[in-house]
Image 1 (cartoon, rainbow, N blue to C red):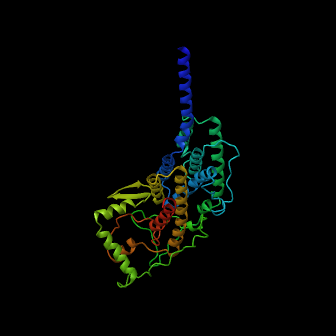
Image 2: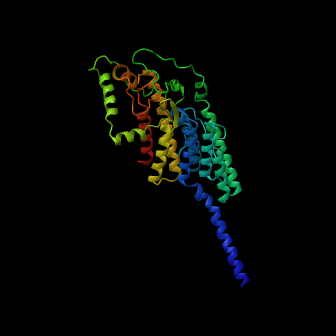
Image 3: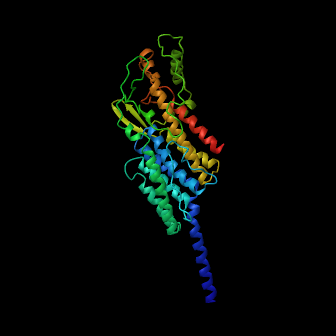
Length: 375
């Protein structure tokens, strides 16, 4: 009887041990975990008020790091971006016969790069530590954990070295933007009258495009507020009339897509700021929703995030090139000057030129990227 009970105990321990050893694989191979990890970076970006264009850079490099780990672990289905993205010549490969949990390594690589391209220092440390603790708690063997963390670090370091040559640091010391007071040119708008946002972003190295101006859009209608029959005047009045006649549904849609990372609220003499996700952060959330609805596995989910973030990054460069090339005045400015001094748009006007539309540009690029992955 004792021998029988002992056998049951040993068998039970064996089953528990086997279950524990596989727990970490199931836990980290969960696509929702990657989406949640991107959301953690979203919180860092929003909390520290990164501008939309800089946010696109944050997400792109972090997601590329995660993708490169996935591609190394599943080369039959995913190809490294080395040689495909501008100046990304190579990414470290894992050692032969090295036991690596690739989903775990992808998450760590994402976090390491995400922390490196944001601030303050250690912005992702708490979350990264929680992933490492989960690996131990879920029974990941020590050698697999160590090898996975080492490979994640190698990939993250390679991506960060590549990122440092994209002109971002040089761009931080670019000359201050000079306001052109010529009629029809952009000037700061109420209530913040903020300086021009990232006027030299066209100097940033694109990832896929040949240059910032490769797909520059045609010029906008010629500025003319004196001729009521001009295309420009009619376009401005369409905007004014549309704002004044919004349906509740249209107003809700406008606010849903507002994505102003820092809105200044003015109530009499009281002013306070409201922080929200920027457009790239909004699209990162949409990628997560798309992955969930399509029941994508971990690797496909990472691919979708990487592809979309690259599209966002390059489309912001293209859009900002056009904005400061054409330097078009905002409708709010001309309506206040020529039509109604007290008129205000539904959404707060952001601090950069009007043409071409940022939301339309980056959303079209993101939609194309997502369609290429999910159909």
